[in-house]
Image (tube, rainbow, N blue to C red; front, side):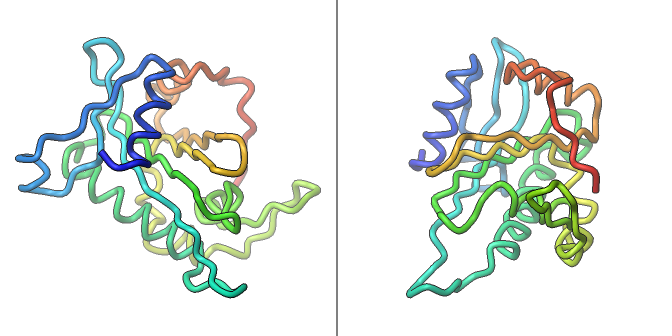
Length: 184
């Protein structure tokens, strides 16, 4: 396993979940997510890990973070669909962030199309991302896990499937009533 995959596997293990890498034979024949994640003997969810590396050089951004996040979501959905085409099991996309100029608000912008100001007002300035090629795909991911080198870890739930949402909240010990809703 790669370092970021190890970080996610360790994070999941601390929550009583264990990640199993897909066998080489399966990975050779098709794209797959990184892990099958289990709670006890039961499959809990599929998990794909995406790394966000530093994107700056001499003070300017080489690759806009919104395009990278959109690309990662698009690619992850293809990987999930290869093993979970009817979405019978939750899909979790874990981002491991190493870029000081990227944060959870960038992911929220890509998913909702909205910039969230300090006063919690929203402004629809990122719609070309949220309503672009991930418009339908983003609903196929039930939890976005954000592990950050610089800030606290965060969770973003799509809430597109009530049963999956309840299970994921339970596995990660999150009170469903304490989740702050972001209205698109």
